[in-house]
Image (cartoon, rainbow over the protein chains, first blue to last red):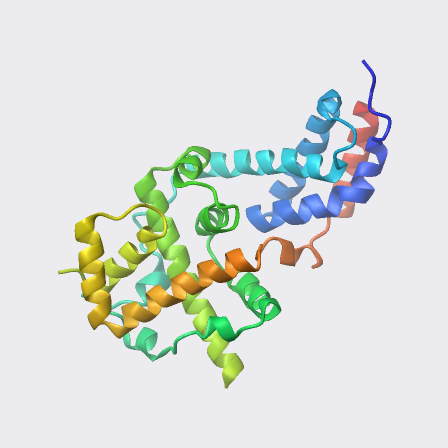
Length: 188
Length: 85
């Protein structure tokens, strides 16, 4: 079988190593795991070189493999029970015992997101996103950024739909709280 | 009657699944009366719109940061690639 001529594995690390790593790191938040996933990605790519049709971008092909490896990693983590029983303490502090908004949550002002420049929003949003617990970040990313269906996400992460809704609810409460705080600070 | 915590859960779920008629009605009723939940709902919709409109990907904004492979990992992977090429 002919190997595509435009592919050179010895360049991979130099050309794509950090991009792949940054992606894995941002989702997994763990240096060791992220490095392991990047390593697995290169090895798997070497094994399946014949599946790479030249012409397509090599980086995109590697990223595709990496994404699957990252999802595998998330899934194996999700199997370790996501502790849903324990209340998310930050989310808990937003409400009183009777389920009404707490005073501190009431005091925050409404966001005027439509007045924000895209770049400003991107920066603040990224900071808030980094503050999410891993399982919440993973669900929000798949749902709102990659726009996957809830069915797909549940399958990928091996969680029930009601667990998914709880995680997304918490992620959104946290993001709203964080964005609110940061935007208020900026205005002051 | 739903309290505000329940309502925010329902607002969140309405972005993820089809809500029932009864759910829609109780949501509408609560949000009409409660400014804090109304604000939460507006914020949720605004965040979703911003993310989609500007193609925000919180992962990508980190790529230029200090997140690069460690020297040890780099060495290890280099050797593995050469060996398996």
